[in-house]
Image (cartoon, rainbow, N blue to C red; front, side, top):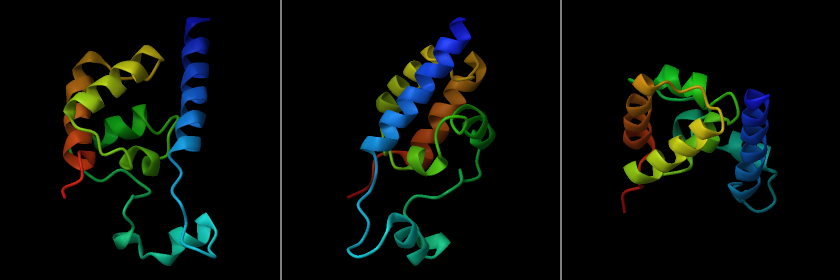
Length: 116
């Protein structure tokens, strides 16, 4: 029962984040057309997690509810990713204690704050 509530919470959170994190497409283009207009290597938000220590953890723990593109848009610092991971774990994300820090470091190093 508890696991079902955790998964339901993750699904609701994923829907809420997806609804609020949508990007605005270029004028006169649908979102799908906008994404195809950029070459894969030039797209600012990758459709898959990049290679690195923590890649498989992100695929297993994050992609069960979120697209990699949604995760890569976040640009959070270490504290922001720590809060997000704690919340996701509370809601049932399958991240073991041993994987927690590895995943946080991976997320910060690949999807940390944008440089100005």
